[in-house]
Length: 179
Image (tube, rainbow, N blue to C red):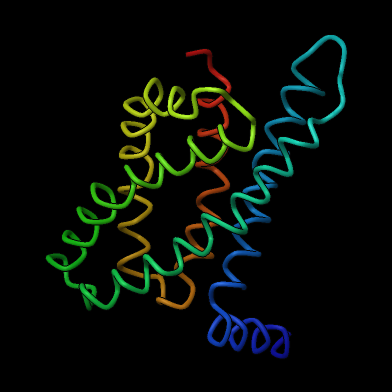
């Protein structure tokens, strides 16, 4: 077990973007997969197959876009706001939620629309941003409080990835709603 922990620690330290991308992509894929299993296998009279292209889009998005972005973001955030004092944590929470989340939601909705081949790649962002952002505040502010107070910087993205498993299920639900 100690060899596994050491392997993980070394790779997260030496290759944080790759390690966090893989973890985040796996969790993003898993969240979408759980949503599809629930909606296509259990909540219907006639089960249907999982939507493989959608699963691939979520895996790609988590691995190539979200994981690397969050790795760089938290490294920057931790360098600008050092410590776990309540005042520092409050600043981190504010900057994280109100500076990073709007662009991340923009990137999510527009990149998914591009991968889905939609003609208006901004439509979903325009129609779903407000509700998604409100839900994000209710979910992420408590999660990030724990993150900034207790989680070591090297494990921030994996913690966020794990919390994102729950959040992505919420996001998948919002994304499935009609405009």
